[in-house]
Image (tube, rainbow, N blue to C red):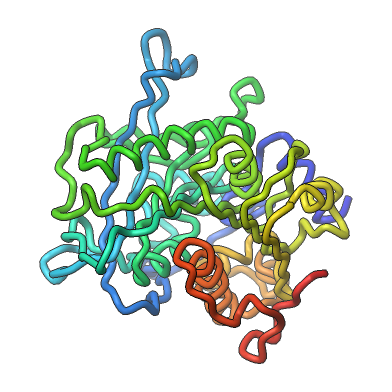
Length: 390
């Protein structure tokens, strides 16, 4: 089977390999102390703040957790901040969740240290002239809410509130009481795009709470100063990678609160039908319309503004943090050049970062802020790798 066919099959049953890995990895012998991975800094004019939220959906029982328990989610809010000097930088994910992620991929649990983000934990929110537009993010199968931090903190640095969520039982996540959960491998409890979409609709309700000045955290942990009431839910967008991209389409079909959607190589499996008249953009890599019938079918139902672009050399994991983190991890564990290319393709990591920073921002600026630039008008000399698909 081809790599794409294997990936398509895995996604159809709700499974994907963390960190883009599809086979056992190894650590180099006699390795020095674990290196700390790094993420590129965002380019916007504002410092970034972030806060974690523990959310409980009392309308959805959790049969996995047991009788009387309800679905719990960990979420993060990223936003433009002020007076950040006194607030520490947030880790990319918790140390416990990262150990589970590395171990599941076949790496030593202490292979690397947790990267630091540009987000300052608990920093006060900055007033940017009016309430902040909102973008919600949904991750891929067997992943986590941090896996597209490059895009998330880029949007926040340009004046967006971005809400990320771990889809419990299909994510590596840690709760405030210290529980660390990894994706379940039992098909009986596999989550599909419809389950992801249900999580997001619940999160949108909590965005409404924030906009109204209410604290949605289950433990009532205090919000950063100025964040409550600083969000404009009338300007809400959503993006997702892989299964999260499919979930983005499903949410938009079911919930008019999402005004614009972006799919990062979403396979649109199971088939997403129903006409959609709001703006939708696809950044495809392996799941192109030419190669995936579900994506081609979904495209025919887009009745409003639509765009499909592809970066030359990109693979499924290329529009996310993996593209910059896996090369660093490869060096730490002695991965060969051939193995690395299989994981991240031939799109240079620095170029992938620039594409991730530029195209989602241009899309949401156009459709949530009505700021029209020229990047989405057609091919750009600044990004010769990006093809506009007819």
